[in-house]
Image (cartoon, rainbow, N blue to C red):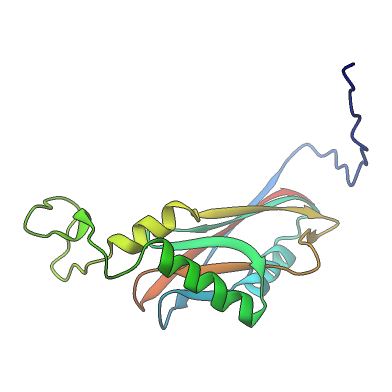
Length: 167
């Protein structure tokens, strides 16, 4: 006998407006080590507060292939566990063809560093997170925070915070 489950639905918010508001701001963050978890939640909240958007969504986007954006808990021991997991998953000292500068011929800088591990780590993390905005507030869970995760080496990182919604 097949059983169909019905999900409980709840209307959280509804906004009917003729025009959407779009605001995109950039923040620059100076990283100090790798891996490093930098909590940018307050920056996101400040951009959303300043946007005047009441209902919509905010996307937080890293403009880098070796710095990720993820939502997780800001608990110091957990962050140590996550950093260790990233290093175990793609160890910096392992062989990566991307690091073989005798063979690699594209996307090179004069001061290119061996960072194949950070690209591999990024593949499983991603470049962005999108969060609903309800009644003018981002709808994160109790322990959720938004992190910029440095995977390569210390440097300035640029993060876009894009708010779309209605006032």
